[in-house]
Image 1 (cartoon, rainbow, N blue to C red):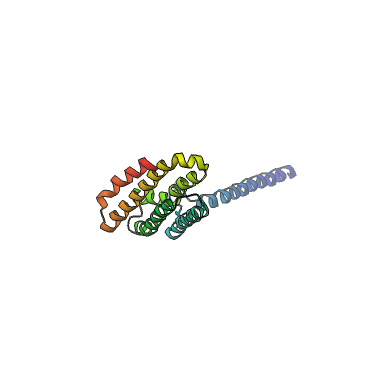
Image 2 (image 1 turned 90 degrees about the vertical axis):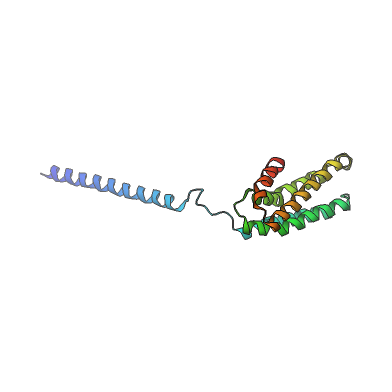
Length: 174
C-alpha cells in the first residue's frame, strides 16, 4: 500500500513538474513574440530625427571644406549652393511626398552622397586633385542641377516628374 501511495505521489510530482515547465516555457516565448515586432511594424526614424541627421552631415561637409585651404573657392561656393538647396527642398519633400522614391534619393544625396563625393576628392593628393578637378566639377555641377530640378519639381508640384527624376537619380548616384 505504501508503494502505491509513493508511486501516486511520484506521478503527481512528475505531472506537476511537467506542467510547471510547460508554463515557464510558454511565459519565456510569449514576451519575445510580443516585444519584438516584425521589421514591417518597426517605426522608422522620425522625420525630425532623420532631417537632423541630414543637416548634421551637411554641416560636417561644410566644415570639412572650410578646413581645406586648397579647395578652390568656386567649388566651395558650388557645394554650398547645393547644401542650401537641399536644406530648403528636403523638409518640403519629406512632408508632402514622404514615400516617394525621389524623396528617398534626395535625402540620400544630402545624407551620404554629397559628403562622400567631396570627401573622396579632398582625400586625394594635390597632384591627383589637379588631375581629377574636371571630373569633380562635373559631378558637383550634376548634383547642383539635380538639386535645382528637384526644387522646381517641389515648388511647381510636378508629381509626374517624380518617377522620371527618381529613376535618373537611382541610376546615376546609387
